Image 1 (tube, rainbow, N blue to C red):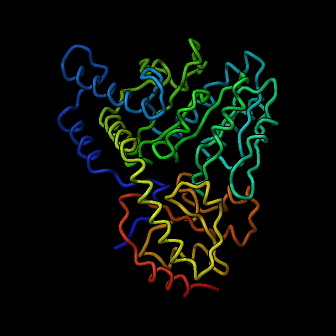
Image 2 (cartoon, rainbow, N blue to C red):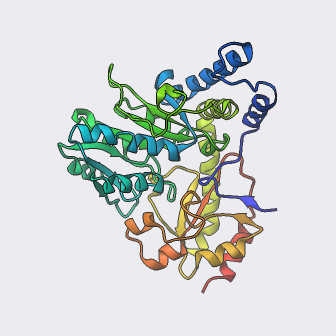
Image 3 (cartoon, helix red, strand yellow):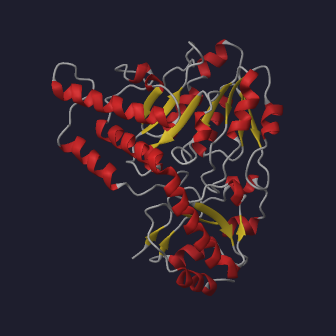
Length: 377
């Protein structure tokens, strides 16, 4: 039986989340927009309860949680949704980083085609961006600063708190793609200077197909987003369409469990990481990213003489791992993240990502190491 070790791509669903999703598919199937009967009223209340749980995770308010189909859509709404405001106010400069997910880089590229200027800050060789480098990139016409919370390939936590402090006196909006860190590195996302946070349920043991954009107010001022779609006026006019109540309720329960068990889960993942590192030690792996700055459930590494495609083929049927971002493409291309970290071509070609969680089964690491040893060049 293959052990799943690709939790950065997606996580298994928590049993309690699965049960509540099924309940709201089969029993409580009402439309939250239906105002004339109790089915709709119960659905609306369930959505509001989920909204409260997600808001609590990041110290936001219920009305600041906008449900979407996932972090990719949330990122697009946060970035492209500011286009009109930027054009009207002569603020057409955006600061981001070279290690962002394509769900941020591609909307930024679309804005560049519309006349915006984008500055992408390079990371250190350890995989994180210097706050001072972000500060130096900010200009008077900077509309938005968008920095990911945790890198999806290396697990490296970015210095969000320090960047938020730097932006304290700056008018630029601050967006965080928190797909990998939401529900795991909790205090960081509660910083009040963060204007927008993108999250996905399927990264925290919830269902696929639902996420949120948390849009904080600045005092009494709303972030001036323009919707990307129209029709129905749901989600405060920012994201129309019938709400998937079963998915939203599942997201809420997954968030509640993540908040309640965050330390316990982190401890389990940290112990698992020690097993992985100890087992791989004889192969002298080169770890990509500073482990002191990484979440405890992922490592990205290369082994001299080991090709990633050959390794995954050899390990097929034993463990399921990755050599890149599953959210980027069905075809492998060399990692733009590892390139930005200035790894050499051999290390990039050989890079493997192993990511696990509190639900992961134990692995026969001696067998894994033996298998890898056999495919070394």
